[in-house]
Image 1 (cartoon, rainbow, N blue to C red):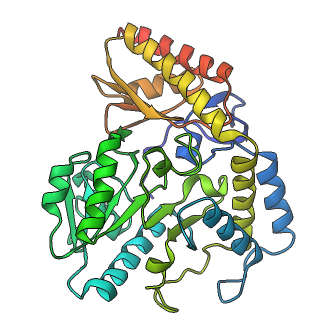
Image 2: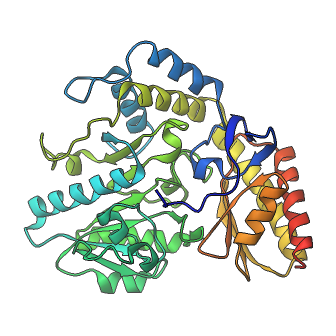
Amino acid sequence: MNTYGRLPIALVRGQGATVWDADGRSYLDFLAGIAVNALGHCHPQVVAALQAQAAELIHVSNLYWIEPQVKLAQLLVDHSFADKVFFCNSGAEANEGAIKLARKYAKKTWGPNKYEIITMEKSFHGRTLATITATAQPKYQKDFDPLPAGFRYVPFGDLAALESAIGPQTCAILVEPVQGEGGVNIADQAYWQGVQKLAAEKQVLLIFDEVQTGFGRTGKLFAYENFGVQPQIMTLAKALGGGAPIGALLATDEVANAFQPGDHATTFGGNPLVTAAGLAVMNVLVNEGLLAHTEKIGAYFRSKLEDLAARFSLIREVRGLGLMLACELDRDGAPIVAACLEKGLIINCTAGSVLRFVPPLIISEADVDQAVAILEQVLTEAGA
């Protein structure tokens, strides 16, 4: 259907941080399937896990225990604040589950009128009706009304506005630690400490949408670790499967116990194939020093982008964490993205004027140098 304005190439093969199109031309991929291919394309451990599992058992449904699912859930619990995991197929589904869980827990714990969820302007939480409503950007909501009730919006990073918005019907705050689609927007440490304090004082749940920030993207396994705060619910997807479609809803025992059999379900979620891939991804992230590498290479990449910003006036700001970086421009970013593609570099533009860089976490300094050289050429030709 006519749902994507696709770029004029067909990608047919990938290895590491490089992809090739149907004409045999290579590209340096600094978008990574929109922050999905954290280990790069066709990582040998992920490929081996998928091949082995596909030959053994692909799908059985969640009516039965699934060995790689249980093992992956244990790994996620061992490396996060959470006690329980629900697996689904995507980030939007994980956020739908979080909305349901928060409302059910709040009604059981605090009373039947606790249902409202506060989200942030410029956020992005998915494409279902509930998650585009949670996404406080009118462009995603246009022509899909009537939207579900029970959401309120405040500016991201504004603690006073958040405090004012919390009322007797508020059950949860849903927030991205770093806003991805909204322009790679970041709030300071004091804000996050204040958000957690407010949630505790006002008896509302804190939900972190880590669909894009999770699994090493910011230099920590989960982005909340950067800020010294801890949610009660967290949503994950994108990088978890190394390219296989999987999402996850994590929660503390107290909150997770609000769900009973029949409250929430999925046919495909957490099947043997995708959880085998997730196990391989987690093994690499946790055991092969990739988080430290991400912090180091992210700092190197950021310094190179800041050097460009000092030389090209069209770059208003460089921001980000780890390998979730952005250059905000003083103009439309789409022509820059298209010109980079022509020269063999895949990036994208979000929020109209923000160049977003979410490359595989395995990239090298040489990869960064190549990407920055292409971007420099494009900016020079743009007369910036």
